[in-house]
Image (cartoon, rainbow, N blue to C red; front, side, top):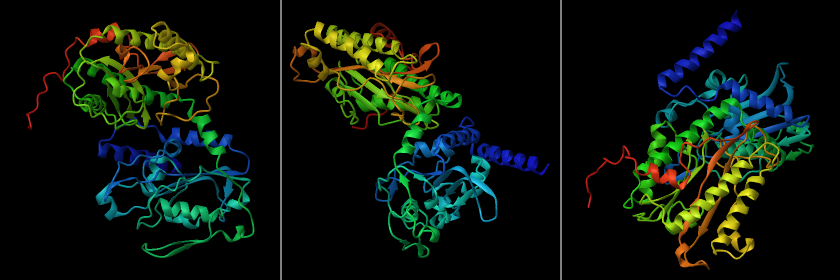
Length: 492
């Protein structure tokens, strides 16, 4: 009866907390994150421990920080969205001095009324227990002397540090947590936290003094890649929504596009659609390249003031509740492909069709690339742009497929394709100004990218709502956009 009462109170706390904030209800559940930790634990080597750290806070300029974004692995395993945190997962249950059994620990930011007035509510230990479902949640400063005997494990697994974080005045910030961990696993000597609210000397566990800690910075990445490349049912709900939102952005700009638009205005239309559907962020910096700018694969300046009559390559993806799409369309700014533009576009379309057909269970991640590349190379040779396959490669310089999920380039083992993987198929042709071919092709850049769900019954194009054929694009571009009537005062 007492257990039932506790569960009821926890559910009410979680519901009221979200209801009062007016936040969405379709986030991943605490049960999802727990199941993912259990899945990791099942794959960990015997007598091992895995240690994860939250992402750093990134400084934009002076006292302004970038909007915080959690480390995808950390979010995947915890659901925790705040910085300055540590997750410890044990392969087997450990026993405390009181005799209780634990198999994981979460260390979080301590509640602080003054700080929360400026930057928002923190979950704290009680919130981590009630909303995230952790039985063992602690304030971050308790990790500084955790008394975990790391030397007793056959493997202490973590991802190698980039050391790209700042040391702030806060006790138990990420800098202190990492330095403390390095001390506890004997990567550095005793560490002293200075210029904080108090001076704390972090020492290695006395029981470890004469022992070597067996660290491993490679296995954990491989284990997480193996988990994350296969999407669960809950993940697919969010990922499909992110993809559909991105497809809607592509549809709307096809109707709104005209030669007088700027690249950044095109970007703004996409991102407005994302926000309208509740997308929190873009999954990566938006790429909008008109004409020759599209030949720069990761062009993010988006500074051309008029797209004129060029092709406009638009590679953008909405991020919804952590999951990001990756959808690219290339369209004529004036609504009609020229003969040269259409010739290149149709080769890329045919190549993508071949690549999508190759995204079947049992094939490898290289299969779509092999299929698409054969079409592109032959098409360029037939048009006289390239002499042979070696010559054609310069016009298709990137790979065709990658995983998507919590990262736009999600981790994976890059072996055989399996059911419930979601990968991109994105062939392209890029002919920069000055290329060694007929000048009529110069400045033409085309990429078509879709997000493909691999199933037992064949590939499913999740972004199919955004037209792909040249004729379908031209047809949609004749339609009226809800944005066509938007006129703002002239500021000049």
